[in-house]
Length: 354
Image 1 (cartoon, rainbow, N blue to C red):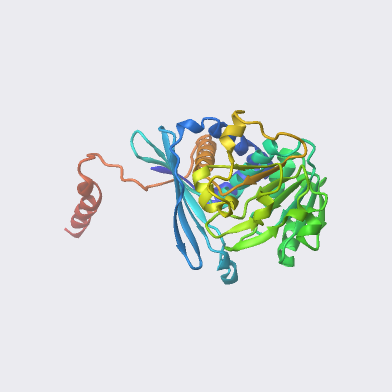
Image 2 (cartoon, helix red, strand yellow; image 1 turned 30 degrees about the vertical axis):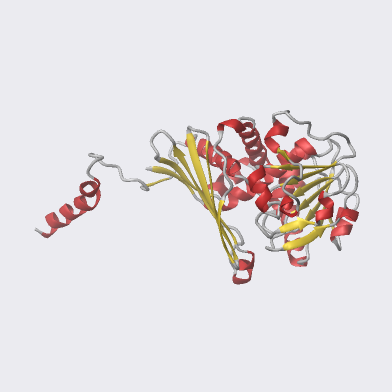
């Protein structure tokens, strides 16, 4: 039997623990895994693109455990009442190849993306950062808000989305959370207005295109940019000139993947970047000065999914009876797959008939 975590299980865990605590504890798990970066197999995700979206597989292993995530991205889905992104994942034992856990990752990916964003900002943003602009108020926005409030002490959130209903939805959801009572929420009329005075700018839009969400006039010295939405070829959010601004440090998760999918796909192959593992292991200083502009060019990497699967598995293992499914046959004779499955059923049917 294989442990199983569904959407209802994740919701129960979050409602018991609290989303803020879950994100913070998950961020600690992700950080610990990035600090042993050298132990992991690393590869860019395998993507199957279509005119309307993308389906991807994201595998990794540390030699003891193996994980993969299936994830899609279809921005037009919402017009049909469907989610833009859905995902599930598997955690397996390398020694036997047996799956240990099958888990939903639609909700969990939103949580791990927020955890990774806040973790990167904890290293890269100025310690006194308290105001964040949140550009794009869709499915990921609540999680980002909770993570930055919990982990960085954000006290003012400046919201903008071209869809006013999305902003209204986000504000309504945030105001319903008692743990965010001290969070000042400001609706802006444009991206430029939202960014004015912000210490951190998070862009998390969904359209699969080379959008220009952020331009150099909106970026002041010392700001940290959390660029989340650009995560596949042909999908970016920052004007290329933002990346060319003086005294900019760009941090990525896994450089070969980010060159294909991130904001830096707009730049020459020799454009300098730093991998996050170098920062969190203190091989490279997080920022050189309070005036430096830092950019976390986030596309999502398989190690983060490994972290959330391992974190979720540890949580359900603490339960007395985690939910399980018969994903793998349990056989008396491991050399007799037919007899232990189809043959056994056939014999039982013949006995009933006779």
